[in-house]
Image (cartoon, rainbow, N blue to C red; front, side, top):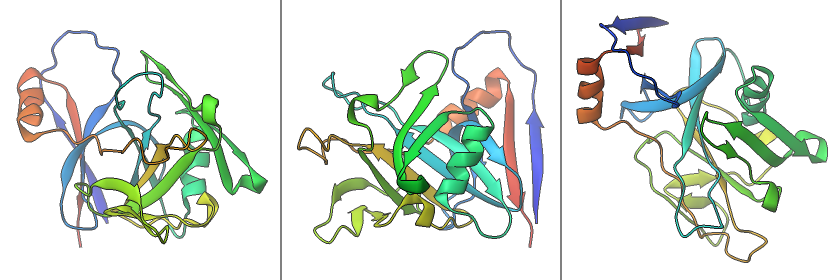
Length: 210
């Protein structure tokens, strides 16, 4: 059973367009980290972090990843996570082939509107329980993306696990370069966490109990 602990400190008065909140995520690998989470959906004893990177192909750089959280009881799939985040208005999901194929995710972070409309359906999906796992090129057998386990079926067949991270990465499939960009979990470095505590704010920590 998990208990939600709120660490409240005196807040400062400053305005920022970012909506990400540092969240202490207890991963299935035992490597617990603070992750910048930009929205939550669902409820229950289990939780997973979804990391999405839209990647900007018009510029010579890799864009930052965005993390979202999902909680549930029982059995759930990546499609359930995306549907819940869509229904709660965190972002907008469009799909094809009866919901098995991801077309696009549209998300506004308060500064930019993220979409992969120029290459609809061009995504890689993978999972890991290690927040430090390195995303890499697709293996010859289509089983791994670096240290991540690649999804070989539709995202409605990708089973969620408590303490696991799911990665959805935009790729340049139609441009003939599907391994051009990688995905990173938006981990908050420890010094930044301490600085946030010093400046003030509200940090949420979910603690597990046996």
